[in-house]
Image (cartoon, rainbow, N blue to C red; front, side, top):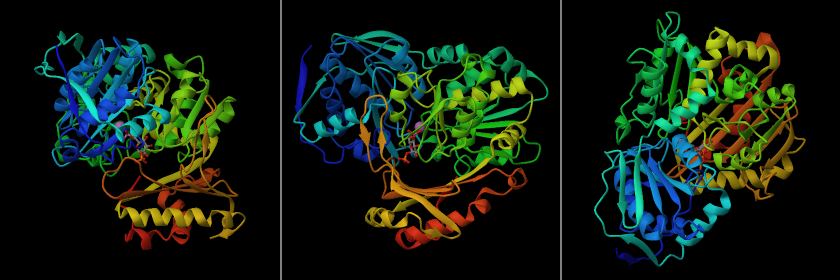
Length: 544
Ligand code: VG1
Ligand code: CO
């Protein structure tokens, strides 16, 4: 088998963001674009000869073509085996599970997660290391450095493999195994949760649930687990067939984009429980009847109830949350006498804490929750965790959350996104804020007093690596907070994210609408950052 060496020149825009390299499909379709990045990944790794690479994606447009290219390049670069998901499908948490279970060297996941798909949508590629988690910054930086100097990539000229048939074949000297996309992952989840008890809940007459897979990757997983295995009625999973363009939707499980589900859960005769997941299956939204659970509260409730779930019954070692996520989980950690770690945005920062046994549960305000069972966030895991709690407690979602607030107080929370902002203007807004930081401390702002104002910097407690400029924080003396950062996953212009949080211990004040409760902070955010002026927008494009 002859390896073809193809001459190439660097692309200047292959810097991975919060979660891999995301670009318009048309960018990826340029000759050599995908190949350059893939070769740069391989060139940044050491000693993978003969080892296993896991490959799969969220099923979006260009998934299959990209997988064929990656398989031929993996063979030409000396991998011994590729495990690829049936039909090219592997959700992000399932890929993490497969990497860990089979001791693979690493994995390549094709996904742009919540970004829209289709020929005019986005595509993405990310590399995961042998612990099953996203490559840490030192690896993504090495990959980026390589993309800037690459001159050649290696590929085999062989026919495509058949992704539609399970089984083993060879490509050059490399074995390719098309694996069941669901089985290993389902087995792992069965080892963590009380499936018998959840089955009783889902087959009983007192409980109805609705799962919106948003025509993205979790369809086959959710149908296998909720309907086939746990006995929920057919139709429990909606939008369950993965489509290359996600049915023209935006597979982001929040109140705005998962509107089909929101209408059902907030409509007449609503079911007891609703959930949605994103493009690649690593995020989740949890709803009760007429009730929205913020992702920050969800993490806190899972942590507080973990002992009810078989996989966590002996207690959790610690919690980790991203910096913009509310401090609701910190309060639970306090009561449990365990540590709560605060990391920059993006799951890659949780890997070391999980590997070192410092954290068991992790979460982000952006609808991501997970645990040490894999090294990615995991949407269906969170749904099953909630179902397990509901099956044991036999109370409504709303009851459980309100009781939680009674005990811990309520962290009012909201994120305001301004999407598609001119990049220069967004950068100016941020740099002006940064310049202002030293003068803010101690200053009164709209009835609050600034306690601290900084640009978040993180030192990893395990390997000592540091990451700076991870978001501008203005904290007030009463514990309220405003955070500003620019998204690292968008592909058009810039997205400004403004995170707002205030703490309310008084039960009598737990019934406010979050936007009303946060109004004073929203006004301060405008006052200090002049959001309207710089974004040219009157209001956020998305409020979650
Ligand atoms: C967003 C979220 C972040 C999440 C990331 C990847 O990043 O804020 O919490 O980890 O998406 O999630 P950013 O940089 O746009 O704020 V996923 O499920 O889209 O891969
Ligand atoms: Co995702």
